[in-house]
Image (cartoon, rainbow, N blue to C red; front, side, top):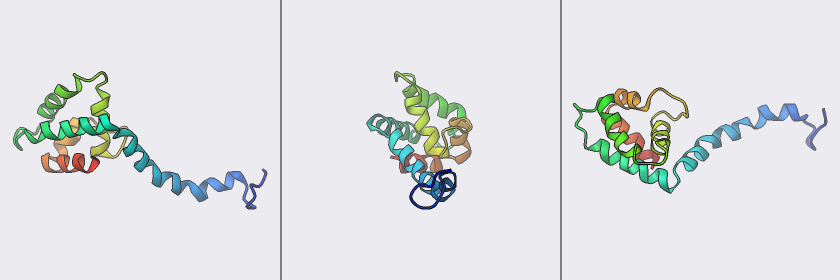
Length: 116
C-alpha cells in the first residue's frame, strides 16, 4: 500500500486515530439531535414527566404522557429518539419507556436535563 507522507500505510492509520472519531461521536450526536426542535421537545418531555408522581412513574404512564407530545409532531421520532439517546446514550436501545421506569423518575429527569 502507498504511504501517506508519514511512513504509515493507510490501513495502519485507522487504529491510530479511531479514538478521535469515537470521542467526537457522542458530542456530534448530542448536538445533531438537539437542534432547536429537539431541545424544545425534550423540555416538554421533562415538564410532562415531572407532573407524574413517583408512584405513577410506570412504563405505561410514561408512554401515555410522552405520546401526548409525540403524536402531535410530524414525526414521533423527533421526541422519542432524543429521549432514547438521552436516557441510554445509544441510538438503539430497549424501549425508552422501559428504560425510564427502570431508572426511576429522578434519574430519568436528571439525564433528560443533562441532555438539554
